[in-house]
Image 1: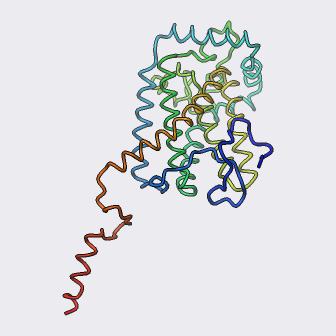
Image 2: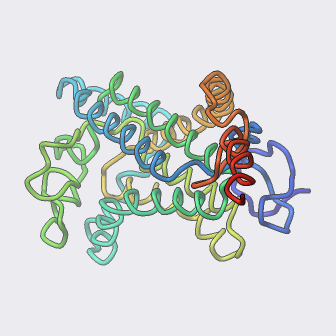
Image 3: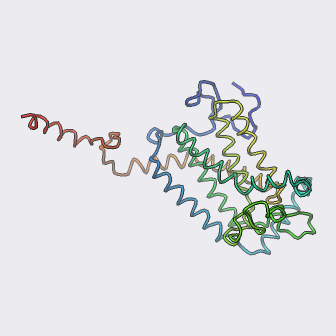
Length: 310
């Protein structure tokens, strides 16, 4: 069955019945291995996500690289875009600079949405689509770590930090008095030194937005929410270009990183399944809930019951 209006980026892996959705849809995430098709414990997930994000943030800071090298990489991207007749950044940046009613909300969106929407989608999947949660979480983490590799190998100066002769205006600095961010970064004022401003390639703003959009399109039940999810990556791309935080090729690279992470997800899930099968199973293979006795304890309890009755 072919779905009209489905964004081309969503690959048709196989057509199947979506969990909890009576309509036929396109499955994007790989099927879960049998022992992983359950909701993990929430505290373990919080701990894992915190550790991965801390490693990502720390690695991002350590991957700052040389400023002159980052500028050279930024200029090289502009050169390749010129060869490809691509120039979406300049007209959008001029529009955002000239029209505060567009530029100011765009800066707020750039500084906040990826911190709000991405965790919200992750929590929603955990609560409402547990069968797809582990694959989605693994996909997000794998892609994020791949993005960190990109920051390390290719530190890139964003358009807003290039010399003014190249025609870009830093809207984050221009409208900084309207928000919590400082003139040097989208971080809160005074904390700009704790961010890596040269981590532009790939754009994980675009990558994470694409992740959110695909999952919302796949799992949301109402058409309005699904189409809002599909529009979110496109809107994010316009924002990162108009605020001069990324080049168009940064966004393309962000989508490519998510694609590679998606391809790696089934392998990561199978590896996790093997690790779990090899780890000690204190329940003897039985599934137990909180406060429930293990099989050996049940036998002891049954033996004690007649004595207690006597």
